[in-house]
Every structure is written in C-alpha cells, then in structure tokens.
Length: 45
Length: 473
Image 1: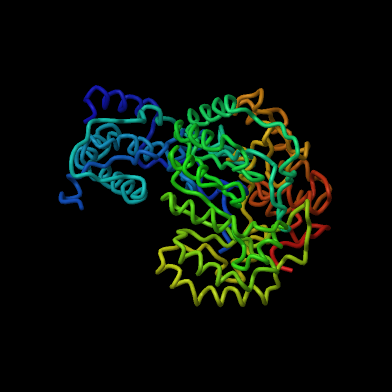
Image 2: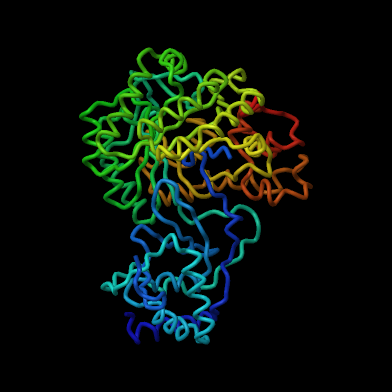
C-alpha cells in the first residue's frame, strides 16, 4: 500500500498544479491518427 | 474467478501496459502487435499509476479522495470509471501483491496543452517498422514494395546497431517493431534480431512468404521466444499461387511454412491479397486455412503500387459482392474452427477508405517510424527509397534525433494551410479535419503526379485535378 508520505507528496503536487479530479485530457483521442500503413494490416471493414 | 466483492479486489495494471506523458495528454496502450492508443487526462493517469496490486479498490478510492481533496463519492465514481474504461488493461486480483509500481503518479501531475490545430504528433514514435531487407526471392505481381532481387548487393544495419536502436525504442516505451521486408527471413540473424526486441520489451512481429523457412529456422525463432508468425498465401491452387509470385514452388513453401510454425507451437496468422485473379478462390482458401489451425486470417484488398501499377488486378464491384456473400456463408464454420476472419464485410466499408472522410491519417509522420535496411528513415514504406521523404539516418542518428530532424519539420510544414495558396484546399472549410489531420497522403500524390508535389489536394478529394484508381476497378 502506498505510504502516507507518498500520498502527501502527490497531494501537494496536485494542489500546486491546480489539477481537479474531473479534469479531462488535452485532446480527444479521435483527433489522433491511429495508424502507419505498414504496421496495420489493412482493415477492410 | 474472483471470490471477493469488487471493493476488496486488488487492481493491478497488466505487465505489458505502458503510460507515456505527452504534451496533450497521457497515452496508454498495451505492448503487442495491434496496440490501441488511448489518450487520458492526468487524473486518470494518476489513478492508473496507483493500480499496482498493493491496494484494494476501497483503499484506492480513499487514497484518490485524499490526494485530489475530493469527496469519497467523487473518488469512487472516478475509480470505477477508470476500472470500467480500462478493464482490458487491468487485472483484478483476490490478494494483495508486493508493490511493483512502474509508474510514479507524480510524473502525471501536469496541465496538458490543447493543440492549436494542425497535426498531432507524439514526442517520439510509439511504433517502429524496420525493413530488414528489400531483397526478396519472389516477385509478386501485386507487390507494393520497392524490392530488389535476392542476389542483389545491399547495405544493411548490423546487429550491434540494431541492438542500440531497439534499446532506445525500449527506453522510449515503444509498443512494437514490425520486422518487414522484402523477405525478412532472408536475414540469417532474424531470430537474434527478434530476441533483442523481446529482451527490451518491444513486441516483434513479422510476415513471411515462407520461401526461406526451414525446420531449423522455425526452431530458432521459437527458441528465442517469438510466439506468433504471419505467413502470406493467396491461393489454394499451386499453379495460381506460383503465377502470382512468379516463382514455381512458392505455394509448396508457403504451406510448408504454415505447417512448420504450427508444429512448433507458434500462433499462425495469414495474409491474403485479394486481386482479380484469385478473388473467386478466397472463400475456399480461408476455410482451408482455418482447418489447418491458422488462428487469424487476414483478407486484404489489392491496393495500388507505384512500382508495378496494374489496374487490371483491381477486382470489380461485382466480384467483391460475390466474395462478400460467399464469406458470409463460410464465416461461421471458420469461427468454429477457432479462427478469426478479418475480411471485407460490405461494399460501403470497402470503399470508405477511398474518401477523405474515411481515409486514415498518416501515421508515418505522427506515430510510427519506418527504417530502411541501411538505417535511413522514411515517412512511408510504400515510397521506398524516394529521397524526398527520407528524413533521418539511424546509422548515425538516434531515434529521437531523426524524429526531430530538420527534414521532417520541412515535411510537416507542407501540411500547413499557407502551403496551399492557389489550391482549392486553401479556403476549404474541411481543411483542419483533412490536411490538418494528416489525411494528405504523399504515396497517393506520388502515384498521381509521379513525384512529391506540395500544396495540391489529395487525389482522393473530389477537388483534385488528378485522380487515381484504387481497390476496385
């Protein structure tokens, strides 16, 4: 189990960064190109 | 079987799961042949990094409520949401395991930046394709590669340099390396190369046409720990297969390769290129492969080649309709034999990649790195050694140096709107979700214009003055 000291450090970091539990990511996953032609086997459907 | 109530189970990220911080979010994926890259925000990444098997769900909720200074109810909702969303990446154990945290939650405490528009590019590639050789003993009539003959001289990276490159790939947390060709098994040290990748935690996968496969080679491949192989086969009829590869005896060697890999206990998948000459026999072939014990059967429509353009190899829509209907009939039997069929399911699906809306963005400039046999790096394997698209050289640069080279930045700049002045793209309302999303394909442009041309619409776009034919006749 994570120690109290570690949790305190994480908590302090989160407060300093102004991060909230419900903050989202910076980008929608659908915005990111998913493939390189060679690596995927062409998905025909 | 979990015997404990959910709140008393111990969540733990699977061993092969990777988290990587990017400017725009944290990317999470599992190392393997077909990784799915998902982007999450820092709170989810912090929660995921706390899942190390040392705390049960109830304790985790309390810890999350404490570090985020939230209510227990909010923390419970957030933890359960992560457990649901990433259930495929998290093991739930009945008992506590010694802490083995691989990720420090502190590393994910930051504010991601919203991209200002334009291409979304990872800070380093997530996948590698290393073309081990351009040499091939066969000469498939549908081949898209810029191949050379098996006896032609070729400059290739040595094992020592490949080891250094893979070690860097491992330290960057890359998912997989596709050991490509030519015929990759022509490299005598193929098993050693695969082993280096396995040792650094980057999943190696490959595809062979079987010609160089011997019992001894199969044993060496299995001995280093490769668990799967892909073999290409296009026809059940030996004469037709040998005509497609332009080499007598190729069918026999493909079948032998499939059997040898299966006998050695490897998972075997196959790839079949569907063209006008073999399309009528594809359903029978798929059924037969499933009866042999092949576990994954990929049926890939023939796509254009700039080295051997053959429009007559594109099947007609009618031929595809017939194929889809016959595959519908045999699919259940194939599945009962334990195989998965990746196949064209509808004409609409088949043609969707031929419109800009349905076409995927270019992964060669945003997500993956393609290395030629001598170490030079290109944006697309189908563009071969075309110097316009070479942007680095791993015989003397690191992966990160090549990824950030001046040439790649010049290529990336060709996706900016300013470069399209005088073209219909410049004022097009779809620019950001088209060119801006990396959907401009230089392979198609070279196929249409014969060379790199900057500032022109993709040949798939109705506004393009030059059209290309692809997939269907």
